[in-house]
Structures are given as C-alpha cells and as structure tokens.
Length: 630
Image 1: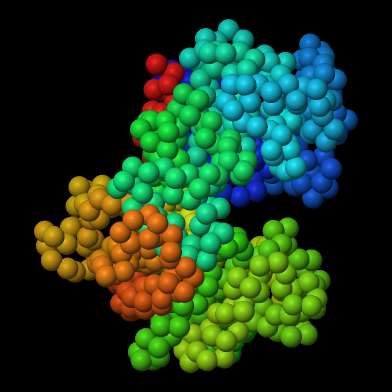
Image 2: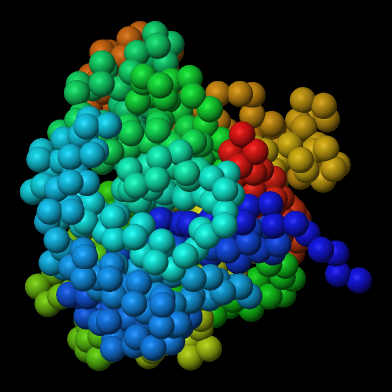
C-alpha cells in the first residue's frame, strides 16, 4: 500500500543559469536533487527560472535538443503560444510587453520527474525597469550597479530578474500560499537577483535561500596569483586565527561584481554551502558571514552497483584503445575528466606521473593516463578529428595551428605532456581534447563499442588535484566502480568522504587504524581541520595530495607572511607532495582480482552513503523545512 507523504514545502523556485539546459556542475546538482524520490515526495511544485539566450544558435539548439527533455508550452521566440490557458497566455504577453523581453514556459525532465521551467530572453530589455531595480539594490543593499554595467554577464542577470518574478506571478504559482510555503533558491550569485526581486516586490512574502556552489572571490584570488591554493589557504588559515576578514588580508574586493553581489546573500533566510571549504570561504568574507548559520549541503553522486567483471570489460576497451594509439596494452589505466580551466591544475597530474613512472618501471608495470578535457565545450566536428587522426596521430599528437590545440589546452597542459611522453619509460599521457567519448566523436581508432561509461567504469585511478574545487563530483564518481581517486587537500568532497567513512566505521565496514593497526580495508579517520587532511591506509580508495601544508620551519606566522608565497614556493611544495602522492598511489594500485574486489566493495559502500537520495533526505530538505517552520 502506498503511504501518503505530506508535501512539506509546497513551492520551490530554483533560480539558476542552468534552468533550461545542463551546462556544468550546477546542472549536475539539479539533476541529482530534482530527480531524487525524497525531493519529489515532499516538495509540491518546482519551477526552474533563468535566462534564455535567443541570440545564440548553439544555446538555443541545446535547449530544444531531444536529449534535454524540454517540452515547450509557451514561447514567443518559437511561435508557441497556445499550449496554455487564455488567461495565462495574456498574462505572459503582458509581462513581455512591459519588460520588452521574450518568455518561454514549459517542462523539463529530471530523472523520472518533470518540473516546470520559465526562461527569459532579455536581448533588448526595457532599461527603465532595469535602472529602477538597480536603484533598489543600491538603496537597500549598497550594490553600485554603475560600477559593473560594463560587464555583459552582470547586466544580463540584473535584466532578467524582474521579468522572471513577474512571469511567476503571471503563472499564478503562489496563489493561496503563505510566505512560509514558498521558497526561492538562488543558485550562486546568478540566482540572487531573482531573490532580490521577490524582496523588492513582495517584502517578507517569500523565503529565500542562497545556495553557494563556490565563493567567486576565493576562486579569483586562487587563480589570479601564481601562489594559487598554497598562498590563499595559508592566508585564510592564519587570518582565521586572528579573526581577520578577507578584505583586510587581500584588500578591498568590491570592484569585482560577483563579490559585491554575494556579500548581499546575507539577506537571504538561509545559506547552503556545498562543502566545508566553501563554508569556510564564506565566513572569510567577514561581517555578518563570520557568525551566521551556514548549512552544509554536500553534493551527492550517482550510486550504481557493478561487478569486477564489468570494471574489467570497460578497462579492456580502454586498454585496446591504448594499444591502437601507443602500441602497448597498459597494466593500469588512469583518467582525468575535467573542464580545461586553470582551477583543475592539470599540470599536477604530470608531476605525479613523473614519480609514478619510475615506480612502475621498477615493478615492471605500465600505465596510460587519458585526460578528457577541452577548451571547445561544443566539441570539434568529427570530420576534423578524422583528418587529424590520419595526418598526425591525434590524440597522441597535436598541433596548434589548425584548430586542434586552442585556448588553454597547450599552456595549461599539453606543453607539459610532450616532454613527459618523450622521457617516460613505463607510462604515457594522452590528451583527448574533444567533447564526448565515443567513436563517432573521437575517431575510428577508438573501439566501436566504447561509450562514456567506460572511462568511468574502467579506470584504475581518477586524478583531480585542483587548486580550487568547491566540491569535485567528477573526482569521486569512479570510486564506486573500484577506482582510486587522487584529490588535492582543498577539494571540497573530502569533508563528505570523511562523513561517509565515519558512517562505514559505525557499520563495521571500516575499522579505524587507531583501534586495529594498519591493514587493508582500514582507514584513518581525519581529526578535524579543514585542510591538509590525509587518508593514511593503503586499502582506502582516496589519496589526498596536500599542496597547502608547509614544513614547520616554512609555516607563515601571519596572513601577511602567507601572501609572500609565490609560484616558486608553490612549485617546491608540488614537487614534494607529488612524490608522496605517487608513492601512495603505487602502494594502493590493485595487484590481484581480490584487491580489485575490495576496492569495489569499499567504493560502492562510500557511494551509497554519498548518494543524492541521502543528501536530499538528510540535509537539503531539512534545511528547507527549517526556514519554512521559522
């Protein structure tokens, strides 16, 4: 018999730039939350609101692509206006005429659930309304829009806020609901203007949540200085000891519009952070953030159970591809699936591989690392890939004068790969700078039966040693399939792994080293601290590379001392840490089927504890329900 569950949150609005189509990390979060059974059993109605890029044919094609799961009920840009009732049609038309925008209303698939979407194209908005909204932000929150109106992105999200809120009212989504029964969740700074529009038009009538998927100011400071994470997080830790805010340590940051907007998130009824590091970075903003409540809502991962035979089937396809490309079949296949951006610190993979290559050679073993990352998110045309394959052996060989290596692909990574491949004796690195992982996308040398799942299921090790990583879903996904994961100590997922490991200890799946001594299948539970955390046991599937911790004699005494850490100092830390990480990886790589089965068992147990269903049930929904009760 089906048990009826009361919808504890009648209406939730998700304001996000990925309302219409999945583009990046927030899209993965939305897939996980909105597809969860626990979410759909306790949330009455859900709408996603955000921009529509009518001037961009690529974005519009992505929106209407069959795989995106969107059904359009009303769209003036698409000539669809009659799949809604006459009153709603007229109300939406009024919004369009008032704000000089185009609206799209429809539904989008998330797992087994369908949720409504409302998108706004603001190619030529009514500037009077935009300026009045900007004046409201200055008058109430001190955001000086005139300082940022040079920025297209800032102008876009300020322009769509008012028409999106008016569109919600036109749809009548909140009719009959009390203020505590309707919630707007602003995903990152891009969603905050919609929450501010609700506060302008209907003060105290909506509950609002800022969902921090990162802290933009922290990302900027990490990426823009050669000291990267080594400098920034040492400064943060020293500043925390002295209760100093970010602006005192790094100087005033209000010239950066994302910083100015995010600081006003304090006016929301709740703040969610995807990791301990993001929560710490928010506190570093100072002022009210230093002591306000910030709920931890970790990102989840998909949980899929496979057998060792399934892992080996996928690995064999990867090995066959390697044999075709490089002329040998590696004992181990390593992977790194990431965006081609500085924050992913792909050069650190090469540093670890330099040490790992010597260890593999000493043991008579071989390995190949496939890095799937590109500066062309839409991908290259398959005919170009075929031409490069036959001309110079893409993706082992690359060129920078024909559209192959573009953007950051050479300076961030391939400039290090070529020298490594010339000198390494037992391993090679292959950069696949193409969107997708299948023969039709990556050329005829890839096995015909290869699919994207193979690069997840067949990997022995996933790299992810970012300099800035708010969470890191991609780094931990392959663990459930029996892979190791090498992450940096600033990777936000570490806190969730700690929590999941503690749960497994309680269940008897893991035994703390302190209690039983070292041995396979045991894990040292971390002892509190945000950074520099390491899992010490050779049977645990996570290797944490610490690029922040410094020797005692080099430890900065003050934030100002930390600011002196430059690229050379970081490079020295990377050289030492990469050697230690390579040693841990080498010791933990499975040598037998039994060891593969043990890694798969532990990885599957961790993934079960870190699933989206678990996240939604234990942290996301309780956070929403709390502000609806207050």
